[in-house]
Image (cartoon, rainbow, N blue to C red):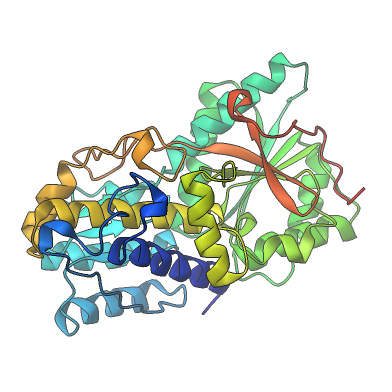
Length: 380
């Protein structure tokens, strides 16, 4: 529940599908790790049991629930927690109790910057995303597109602040002028003032680091105030939420988003995993729930290699993780953790809303569709 309820439900379903793949034999997934066997082979076929708790987007509740899971439910590992602010507090609990915690998708830099040894993060982080945007800007400038300035609009908790700081720092390095940065509260009920500030500054690209309700609200307010920049880039999250496209597809045409997930060609492993998810939920995997699923598989792989449910043995196995691209469902270069617990091989693509779905448009060598520039802002 809370301001990102749809994303929470999507990731819950992703974890359930991942557990099904690990717990039951799925020979149709070929050599995908742990798919052929039923359960964890190195633990005698033991099955993973999932316990879900709902932190409602509240960091202090996340902290309480993590404590309960460890002290009362006696879990062997923890995973979560979507909102970076909630992952930040919950991981501190795991560290204190010596329980491995896999951060599935939270991007704030500070989560893995505290010298913790029990926290691991499978997803790319704020600095990875910032570098991706700058490489993209360089590419499109070579194609003759104009980028005189960009604007950064960020929700003001750990996630939005961390990503916006990283983008601002990379932009400075790359001599990309930031016309304006607008922090705001994700619970705002009116963003007219922020949109009017953007309209006044006329940036060539607006990057939104937003959760769900606020991302939808921005698109609707821009339409109402007749404001359309040449390009909008959503920093995943609200723009990837399952409720975003149904709410604003007709007015957000051409908006871009970052994603390390691509369904792939029919018959591919990723396509088959997506079909399983679709059978359960009625929709495709989105980037956030897919990154969560990938982190789940990396965690299951480590538990299996540990051959034990002893937390220290699982922690050691996580430090030795070395998954290759052909063992993954995401477009990462692999999964390998540095001494802070960060996956140093994580990376991302850029996608664009064309019609009723996102198409992979960058980098060019992976693109499934042609980039439409400028964005149309309305359905053709």
